[in-house]
Image (cartoon, rainbow, N blue to C red; front, side):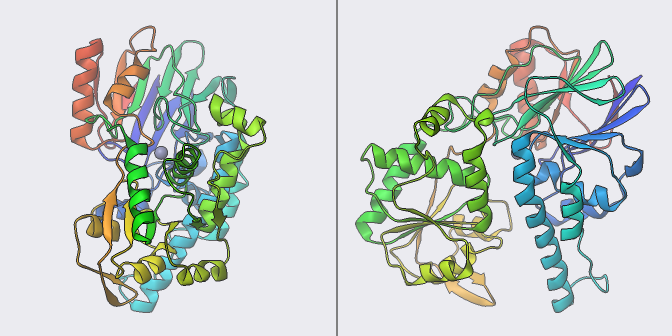
Length: 458
Ligand SMILES: [Zn+2]
C-alpha cells in the first residue's frame, strides 16, 4: 500500500509539500513556505501532521522558496536525513535559504521593536543557523540517472525548464508503481534553459497548474525594446524590481540580444542586489542546465548574461553611488514586488521624477507596493513617509517561468500511456479547474484538483 498526502500547494500556489508513504518508508516531496496573504503565512507556524524525525528522505524539485523555504523549519524540528536536489539547486539554496532566514529574523526584530506581535518576544520562524544546518544535509543528484532514495524507492530527475536546476521528479516505488511530480513546469523555446523534458509514464501524476487557465502573450522583446528606447529618449531611469532567480537573468539575456541587434542603445545597466549578483554567477556555471545557444556562447568565451555596460553592485557604498547617477540608466534591483530590499531606496529617490519608468516583469501580489504602483497609486508609503509617484509604470507581460495551458498540454503529450489518476497541485481553484477541463477534453484522462490535507492511494 502506498499513499500520497497533500500538505501544501493544494488549491493555492505556495507551500508545496507532499508526503509519500510506501513500503514502510516516508519521503517528503518538496518542503515549501506558504507566502502571500496573512492566513497563508500563518500556516507556516503550524506543527506538521507528521513527525519530522520519522521521515527517511526529502526530495526537492527546485530552489524556489515556496518549494524549499520550510526546510530549515523541518531541520529545526529534528530532521537530520538526506535532502536530495540537483547540483544547481544546491548552489541556489546557498543564497536563498540564508536570505529567507534573514527575512524571518528581520520580521521578528521589527515585531519586537514596534510591539505588534501577540507573542512576547516575537521569534523568527527559523534562524540563519537553521538555514546553515539545512545546507549541510543537501545531497546532489544529477539528471536522467535513477538514484536510490531509501529502501527500494528510487528517483529520476529530468529537466523541467522552469529555473536553473529545476527538475521533474519520477519516483519509482519498488518494481512497478510510479509517482511523477512535475514540480514547477517551465516553458518551450525560452532563452538560457532547455525545454521541459518529456516523461513517458506514471501511475499517479502530480501536476502544477499555476497558469492552467492562461495563454502567455508573445512579443515580450518588442515591448522591452520600446520601454528602453522611451527611457533613452527622455533621459530618465528605467527602474526594474526583479526577482533574483531567473527573471533578472532572463532580462539581462534579452537586453544583451537587443543591444547586439542594435534595437536599443547601449545604456549603463546596474544590478543592485547581492543575491541577484550571486545567482547570475551561478546561472553561468551549470552547463547541464543550459540550452544549446547558452552552451555554445559560453564555449566561445562569451558571457550571454552581460549587456555591454553591465555592473553589479554588491556593497552598500556601490548601491548608494547610484543615487548620483542621472539617466538614461537601467537599474535592476530586488525585491520583485518592492516588499523590501534595495529597490525601496531607488523608488523613494526616483518615483517623484517624471522621467523615471518603473517596469514590472513579474506577478505583483495583492497588498504589495508593487501591486499598488501597478494599480496607479499617486503616493507610496516608504520608510514612514508618503512618496509622490510621478514616474510612469509599465508592465512587461510574458516573462513567466511557468508553462501556460498550451505548454502544459504539450508536455502531457509526451506520456505514452495515461496516468491512472492525475492530481492538480500548485494552482488557484480557477486555474486548476480550467486545466482539468482542458486535459479531460484533450486526452480523456481522469484528473482533478488535489484537496488540501487529503490522502490518496497510489
Ligand atoms: Zn518555482
